[in-house]
Image (cartoon, rainbow, N blue to C red; front, side):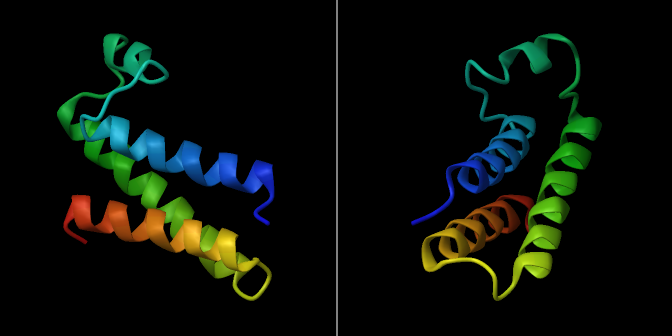
Length: 85
């Protein structure tokens, strides 16, 4: 069973990237209002979140249960597809 804090971390990083790419929700709308998600900065934010998720996958390889590994792999794949990486 995935650890709740791990799930929260992955979901937060993915949501940050998605918000930066224009998928705003209530939790990220204030960042957009504050100008933190301008076009150039938005891509940087999304790429940084992807890099963090990728680093997390590398550093935890072999130490995650199936659900955690799948969650992380799916998040990385979705962001790579959105960013064209």
